Length: 109
View 1 (spheres, one colour):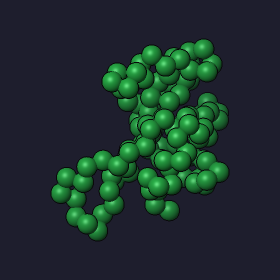
View 2 (cartoon, rainbow, N blue to C red):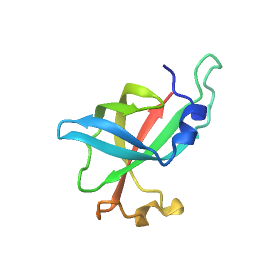
View 3 (cartoon, rainbow, N blue to C red):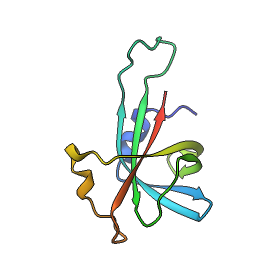
């Protein structure tokens, strides 16, 4: 299944379930955007970037994880930590568990 912006954009604010070596955890989808094509041939998809927020109390390393959401099903995605976007005020966002938010990206090209 190819994930598209049209599929994920309505899911912003939803929690996605991840299977980790420490058990199940959840990340919230906070951003979805298509990235510039920059010379990519038309037969390839437009790059898609997803940004998730999670708790600083359960940080994740860059790795492949089983990710599940009722609207998208179950997939293996490479998830990597990324910096908070100061221009969007992400560095100020508290997590619901009382910690701070840390951010992760999934990039499809």
